[in-house]
Length: 375
Image (cartoon, rainbow, N blue to C red):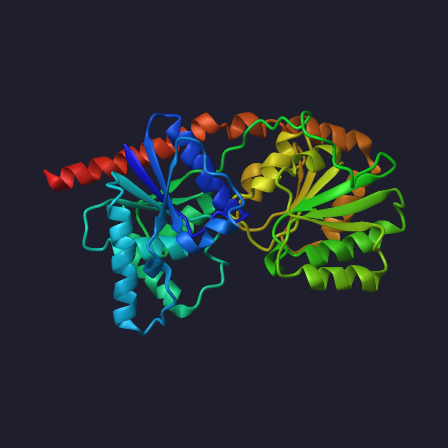
């Protein structure tokens, strides 16, 4: 098959990593893969396009600024996107995230090209204005398939009438070979480390994590908290750390191309998000044998962590229980070892072969539907 993947950019993020992983996985299965992104964002790439995957750029008009009520401008933008996609001659198109999925569906609305929309977060909590909600409700049912990452989200989408043909495909997790990577100099052997990873934005609730760590820091002088990631809340988090006077205990490390040595060297992984899709950071930490404590936010953590078997799952928003669970792990090397030894099961539970089997089946079904409609 010739499959065209559409992404708004390749900056550091879970959706962008998913695009790259899917492109490489399907290419290795002998499919022809074309990845289209806006031309203006190529200098911002964080991820490298896999060898063998063809990279194409949208015409600038496809992502030109345009008011929602500018009908002529909207049509020019759709026409440019449509021409860019159709020139790749795809058997199926995958649009990643709500905005891209809607734009692709709108651009191809009069064509028989099958479109699969891949949701990468929990749209129940994703902030969207009324126009985007209306567009999702209008276009999503017209997609050949809607792919989400958890059964809970599938059930909600079907119950709300967004789509009746929803597939659940989790993120894969790959074995990480971190021993060959140069050790992380910011982490020394004299301390134990709690690590969190993600974009420094409000929904990750790193401010609450820092407050919880401050509450317990005096009882655990040999522990530090490190946060890997970059984003708009950096300044406010730095101010919070200064105000709490824990500059020597909390480190904001920024983006890391290879964050896995930091995960491997840490003692506990935490996830405090308000909402997720299917958090790669949690999967990767567990694949390295890390004991984790996570908020049971929608969605993903409850599908990854088996509570008290390979991690600890805390009722969402229950910060007192979160603090108690963190203290329990900090106090107990045996519990950390027990949970970490089972955490590596994610390597089998979310093996790439099984995940790409599911993606391949969805895309073959979409392409077959196009062939039937032509005959």
